[in-house]
Length: 283
Image (cartoon, rainbow, N blue to C red):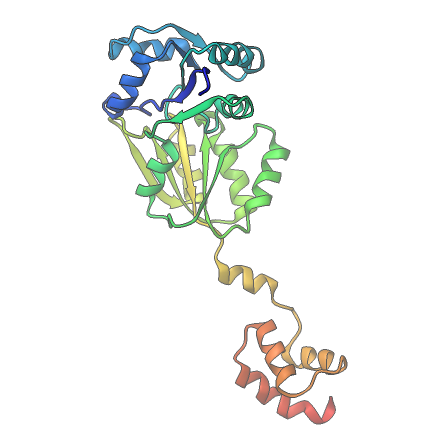
């Protein structure tokens, strides 16, 4: 059996301290070290639950150097708990790099279930939950932000993004340009006293937050693209007559021809067949 320690992924509350699980508290009390995104923020949590375990920082700008240190401690047999500022570590978080290194090094990963902002927002949004795509934070670079949005604009799944208040209007404006005016749910202050869900359209959300400056971190839940709209965009621009003539020249005849044209245009087969009967002598 490996003598390595374990890396525990411990979710923390996204706002309401009452959402901390008994297992997470027990785990944080039992490990040798806690690696936190922001030690000052995590110290408040530890003090609240009377947890007295050494604390070290692990965040985006020190993850390469500190990641190596944590790996050596794990290999030496220490158990380490990884926490983020709020929610599940390793989601839109440098913890994913540490997890990957641990797996490569044969170090056991123990994930604990708990609060996750995007799941909390999704289930209360009213948007389809069967299939969704979590896109995380968009870049601050306008060009790259729009490239990202272009990549997912035809996705029929519910789309989920995280966004900071100072970037919200810029992001919504780009979404309106790329996606069109879709349904959107904006969730903020989740699990807190002033929790808010704004169920609206992208254009109306822009109007609302121009009049009411956004505060707090946001989860954006956006309706996926309608399949009917995609099919309409992909339909040929030619008329039934033009398509019948085009494919008749390629050797298609009868029902094979009319069925193919009907499917291409999204028209009833009988309707296309009637058109075909009227022009077949000229094909």
